[in-house]
Amino acid sequence: MEKTILAIESSCDETAAAVVRGTEVLSSVVASQIDLHALTGGVVPEVAARAHLQQILAVIDKALLGYKICHLDRIRKSADEWRDLKERDPSTRLLNSNRLGMTRPKDLIKYIDYIAVTQFPGLIGSLLVGVETANALGLAFSKPVVPINHYSGHLFSFLPAVKKVAWPVLTLTVSGGHTSLYFLKSLNNYIKVGSTRDDAAGEAFDKGAAILGLSYPGGPAIEKVALGGDPNKYKLPRPMLREPGFDFSFSGLKTALIKLKEDIGSAAKVEDLAASLQEAIADSLAGITKKALLYYKPKALALVGGVASNSRVQGKIEEVAQTQNIEFYLAPKGLRTDNAAMIGIAAAMTIKDNEVNRDTFKEASARVNI
Ligand code: KG4
Ligand code: ZN
Image (cartoon, rainbow, N blue to C red; front, side):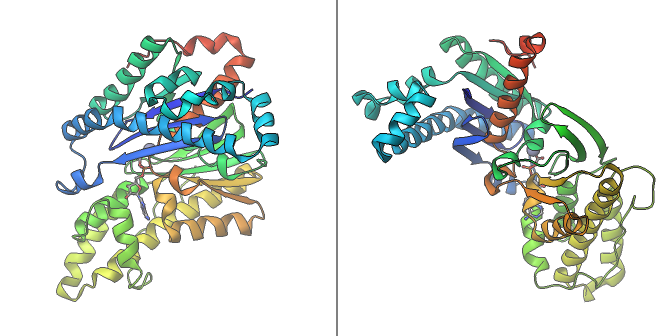
């Protein structure tokens, strides 16, 4: 039976907790710090860490409450389903007690099998809050704590959107902190085939927005403004397309955009500049992904990470999959920007893997170091 996992994510500017079972998300809560960081136009690590401290226990409580509601809903459905559920998950019996309605969220931790937490990479002060909270809960409730790499969280975040995965899958991760291509032969056998040499795609949106005087985070702001602009008005560079390999590079876009803005001066329309920038980023992502598809010949292409919400990027990447006649998987909306559900799903994969291969099971311990 799939294990029930409480997952915690606090690597950057989202305080998040979730309860998952396998790839099924039972509850997911994200407390975003966007408003706080909009004041400074970017994340100030010290401010982020303090905000995590203020939010984390309430966010975990809310995720456990969501788990309880999810269970109660299922129990109420029908006697047959209830019997089914009970067979599949003995913990349901305990949760069906009359006392459940009054159970405090923290008492629900006893129904959790594992606690998963983002261990790396991220802002050290932010990570510490999540890791030490997970350690404390693990110690207090005698639960094993599973350290998860944030990247692997993004990597598997398309799974809830797919019934039966067509392996192998090429995954394009596009977020604020990283841009990479992974070739996934199966859940526990994957290799990195390319990554950014400098800025991430999300960073290119964020820095581009700052240059254009748009709000933080830049991605959604650029997408909104670009709707009223001409994407072919200005030709910004599409680097790395003719280089060997499958690496990306976005830092040159900043300089090109600053120069372009200066050259056109007051005649510059922010809508056209935003649309041209978005087009250059989407073209670069699509072009390099296509090269990798032709080389690795996967059966499916997955798009994950915060930038996966951009419709122009989505459209171009889906088109690449269509032209190669392979399946296209998009991470579900709530699992694109940082969240704890994806950390829980990655933990479920790790636990499954370790149960098969007991040698590596030592990774799950009551103490996660940072
Ligand atoms: O995955 P995520 O939370 O970041 C990291 O894990 O690093 O994604 C955040 C990034 C930000 O750079 C944000 O500007 C970008 O995703 N983003 C978008 C959109 N929504 C979020 N970029 C382009 N278009 C969007 N609609
Ligand atoms: Zn992330």
